[in-house]
Image (cartoon, rainbow, N blue to C red; front, side, top):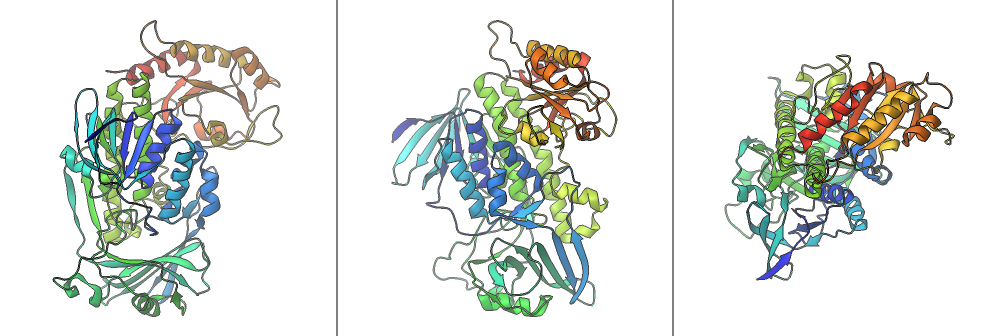
Length: 569
């Protein structure tokens, strides 16, 4: 058996979650090795929904524009019941949210992130499978089987399992995966429909029996391409498990893993739906007469819902399908997994660089497992009771589906709340805002533009007095300056945000006296969305969440407290 010293992190599974982990680690300067047991990307649409929060994450990476050029927008949903239109749901977000909902086949999502990661120097090692692993206080020893069939022993600092619902990493850690599965079976198909419905809207058409139960359903989500949809529907009796032969040749593998198709979809068992099966459902339920054609792939599946008891142990972690699977309602799965990966990656990077203590990694489970539990529970309720049963108002439901309400308040890195009760607090998503100006720019910027490509923690110092901002900037530098012989600083980056009423020349004064860039809140959007209580500072984590909020006069104490939490052993 060959012995290899691998880069600092070994990632197994090169779907959207594993690729996102690799992308974030490489952006933070961490070397990693990315393996996948499959010889090539699967050509299935699988997880297709892209949430606005995921697009914000990709914007920080500089990847959002590439995705937007490839994806199709989702403006809403047309809802039909027993042949009548009963609702037209508009998925319209507040104007300060920079991105809307989108759809893109998973293989395209994977291709785009794979190209991004390759440009950073990491290429997927396809046909390479993790067989087993052990860990000790200093690292992880993994046994791999490569595409040639040879076995290889690899030594790495950390192992991240993004290897799906049948995760070898999860099983190797001995994590539980509690949950269950729906008895009902469904089928999926990637087809073209020739109806005249607006392509930017999904379609949901159901038939209710006399007792009010749903006895037939058709859900169509648009994909890039004229008239192209991924359709899901109840499985016909001839394709049900009861009708399947008890024995026979080895079954074909269907599109397993992924969201909607991604999360909770079992392996195909050879019962492959044909175009005629899809057409029969369309004939019964489509709101317009339509012919379906160009069947790219199809599958029969059953929905599962499960979550691990913990997201990692020691130097080994799980993310995405390896940690949680759930109903496809709301296209939450892939997006949740991508944010798992981003949450973990920046923490691994700081620990590997010596800028944070190992205890920081425990914060991954503390922050992300509650999110996974909430997503599993919510999608299960929505699947069994309908999204209309959600007790929250429609705006809150939409923002939650967009994954814009995820918060780590009360978590190990969230400082004490301050300022107005309705203001963004430590642990909350850092809102985007428009209307930031620079003296040399003839156009306004968004906060996302200012934060793009930054991997460090960013301190936003807001106020009208350039001298106060300069003093806070110096306090930031002092807080980030490690004592002699005590390791490395966090590398805080500081940005001044001048209030709209700040005097003329205030941006230049901050740049000259504090040696930090100064942007004017010309539209007043920063003040409206961040609700500063006088001169206020905000610490933005690398994943776009607030780590601290503090009066400028308390900059040194607030940042020192946050840094102490990061450096805990």
